[in-house]
Image (cartoon, rainbow, N blue to C red):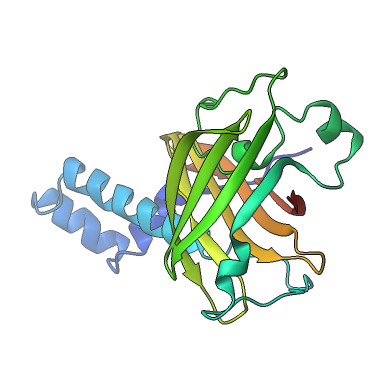
Length: 225
């Protein structure tokens, strides 16, 4: 596949509102130094990243079978199986690497939570209030870890998780990239947990961005005990 590219450096420098001849004049007069120009480029890159992350959205054709609100959001409370309810053959075989706990692990450079195939795992959700959700990691019926995530209950009836949604890989767009993962929760008609994901990853080298970055959309369900 042929890689398309765009020079982000030129985009950012031109977005500062200065014509090229003005920049050259300022540079010659010592008003804009190379160091200042690097700072301007970096800030432009950061602004681009933030704006771009807002363009990574969930699929619009997904139906919310049980819209959540302040009155019923605690219906999420309960204990769930970490394995997807209807896994494909790959997910079923490698469930230790494809489960709810690994889905919410946002340590981008390495896996940080190790599972033992000889043990049984579950997780518990506890809605603390409208903006906080506690997740308990359960191993052989014992809670071994607790996490509290910031959340947002929105008008579309989903609870959105604020879980390091925007992550950086090395130095983004200089020698690395960005990883955007947005997740949200609701309840299935059977009372199980619905977990929607949109996940985007792209990279660049020396501000040359590869536009072939990949985006994944999927919906998982987890059985409630």
